[in-house]
Image 1: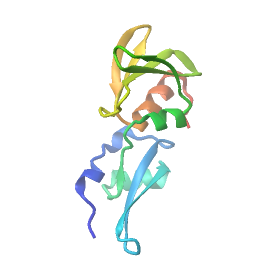
Image 2: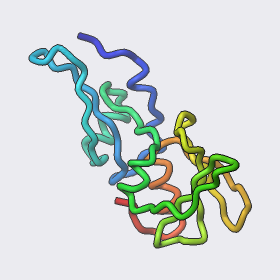
Image 3: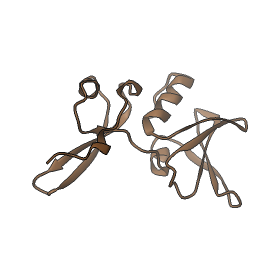
Length: 136
């Protein structure tokens, strides 16, 4: 069975070795699409570069923020925003609404919005740029 194309919309130039990525396969035994998370390796990066199918970016979620070491520090009941920080960079705040329907977070530094991130690998790359350390 061929997998739907929306699972493979991926820009290979955004990925670094060590980023998390989704891998999709179809299980004939279970007759359903199977998903697993992997760290990008040299072999996976080569597959992505050669446009081999089965890989896609991971949408940000609150669970992924917690998995990567962020903690919730504030919830604004009026605006519906939650603020998350990472112990390596407490000055950098990630802000999102409670519902996570948008699947992106705003990056704030000292109340200045500097952009937004939509995928786990983008967050990993941003923090690697800031301090040269991996979020894992």
